[in-house]
Amino acid sequence: DIAGVNGLRLELQHTRATDGREEKGDCSMLLWAPGGLFLIFKLIVGEHSVQVEHNFEDGVAFASDDFCFLEDQVNPDDDCLRIGIEVLEAVSRCSDTRVLRKRAAGERHELSEMSVKRYLNHRILALVQDKVESMTSRMVGRIEWRVEQASSLRRF
Image: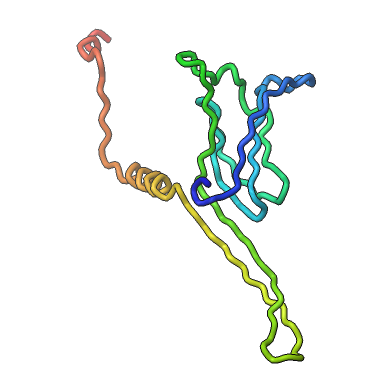
């Protein structure tokens, strides 16, 4: 369970492409999730990360081929490789169709459907900060530069 999402499975595959694809990377990242889930997430291997948006279907994983070179991402200090996922937004949908039985005998059965949609956002603060910084940069009324070795300007 991460960020309110159950059933996630992260898989790292070390690949050796023989068709010339090794110029981008030698590993693939796969993320398995329940069907009906829409995620905005970051896949992380060492210092390399990629932000992705994906709608998951049952039994089908998201795959990011040629993700990076594993050797470049291993921490030389402790010989460890850090892999992970950061869930930024999650929208899950589920519906259930059931037959409801009437209390009175002899009446026909009716189908009823209930749908649930849950939205989680774990990046509101970052989005708001970006917008505030953008607005602040537009309101700048004065800019100053620091000129180093200013005494040498007289020579020119």
